[in-house]
Length: 116
Length: 114
Image (tube, rainbow over all chains, first blue to last red; front, side):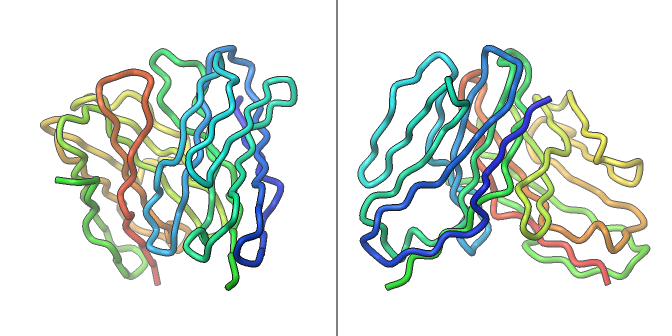
């Protein structure tokens, strides 16, 4: 069975602070994909990043960066110099097994509030 | 067409009534998914279509729930004899034929059963 744990339920920061959102996953499959999605108050899940299990290279995209560590089964997300517009619920998700399995298993999400 | 479209955005219904939701995926996306999200939780998988074939159904999808994708384009999700526990956000997503890609989500249909 697959499982995604986002231990931080809510995080509140002041604008321009850096913030890291934690994600720990569980799967027995050697092939899997990890995702981060952002859900603003409008409700639509916005795709941020996809990582496959064979690529542990960290990635940076503007103020966003992701740290994938298979040794600790973690896929953490850092926002540098946070802005009010970053306020949203962030979900980490796992798609395990590759092949014909397209189902995503989501964590419970982390509500990030960035205060001015 | 710039994204996944869901209709209606909000639905309030009385317990025991039937409801139907529609999802229009992104053009040329052959895979379509339904998820359910309750307050404070992440989305939970309900079912998945590849073209018109329904390939997987979650145990969450009781016999009161039925989903169709008759021509491999839009999809409908029907809930019969609604119960208060069905109140949730119903999310639709789609993805293209390429195997290693992400799903794109619509804005969801929020169902309230009173």
